[in-house]
Amino acid sequence: MRGNKQSFWKKSIETYRNKVAFRRFLSLFSTDVLVRGANFLLIPVFLHLMTRDEFGVYGYLYSFAMAMSLVFTLGFHASVPKLFADTKNDKKAQGSMLFTLSLTLLLTLVCIFSLISLTGIDEYFFGLINRNEEMKDFSYDKYRPYLLVAMASMVLSNLLTYYFVAAEKIKNIQAFNLIRFFFANGLAILLLYTSPDADAALLRLAITYLVEFILCGVFAIFLCKNFTFKFSKYYLYKGLKIGLPLSFVALLNAITNFGDKHFVMIYCGAGVVAVYNLASLLATIPVIVYQSFNFIWLPSFLQEKNLSLLKKKTDRNGLRIFILLFLLCVGIYIGAWLLLNWGVFPKTYSLIMSILPPLCLAQIFASLNLFFFNYFTYFEKSYITILTSVIINGLSYLLFTFTAPIYGEIGVAYSLLLSNFTLFVIYYLLSSYYIKKSIKNK
Image 1 (cartoon, rainbow, N blue to C red):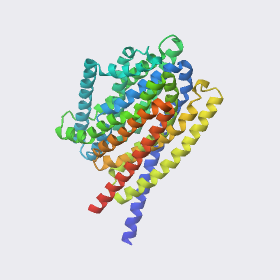
Image 2: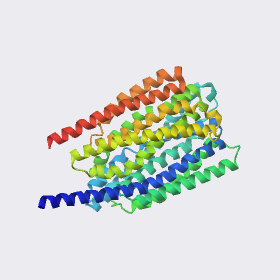
Image 3: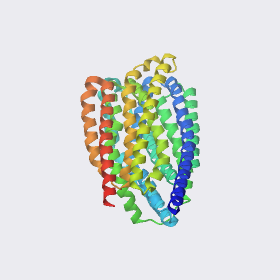
Image 4: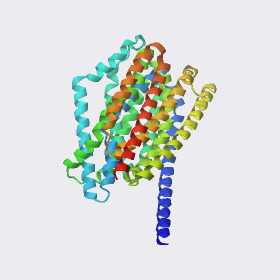
């Protein structure tokens, strides 16, 4: 009888926890749907306010900033949730950890941006696209200051978001996302509409990320309130041990995450990049849906001690995620076809229908890769991803180099799909190996 009562209470507690987690997921997901969905609704507005080349240049620079921000974050997007969970019973240690990692990140940003400004390495990199005759007039220098602001704001935004996730401060995430959406997009659209002769790519880049940068400063107050102003070498070591391998992996992954657009820009020009970028934006919808789930899943995942139960939950949820995202991609494809035929998307973007299928499938596997990557954070084996990233990004680079000159944007899209699928197979096999090994050693 006693055993039955204990089992009953365990099941009741588990059911309650699942309901609380589900409510939190719905709360965050509803805001994400509102913000992200509204962002997608704004795509036709920007398509009509910007020329195809301007839309292509903006998407190209945005993709670069996004890829580099993942490098410059030093992997603290994984370190903060992990160390926050480890220090949940010691607020002083937790505050010291947050102060140490935040200060380290800020000082690192200053050093990196100073080095970029002094060496001009970014100017050399962007000069490569001038190989394309259509891009001879591309002047990177005028975009440079705002590109640096975009990268800085993305880094700070990542830090704040994952702190709010770790602390389960859902309302803070909701407020940050809503304010950022309305202020940044509203002001950008107003200025684009009232300044038709301005460089739309430059204007949108500058306004969007200056607003985001200011908001990061405002919302950082919530993070700073939890600081214990004591620098900890221990938490610096722990944070870098978890994070630096991820930062290096992100640098390697830039070959895939940004490299596809870079090769399209070099061999096809800004006009085709605009179409490719539109397809990429629509294809990221599955990743956005997954991220909303992961924000809620990650804290409970990291705190779960029953490895057999964790394995069952992960496999079950992984299958559900695949089915859900696949059905979502079918809806995205049908929606894009309708929007083209109704004239919401300009006819000059009709090439999107051939690019969208491989990119959507690539993003499904990208979402599953993020899902199974959680295991490497759990076991503090993030350094393993360095080897897999070397292999996958080496494969991606070879595929892009071979397919881009011959097949153009279609070849690049299918190369991305093959790379992401290969990485999924590797991550799944490795995560299964580590959890079985841990269960056997207990």
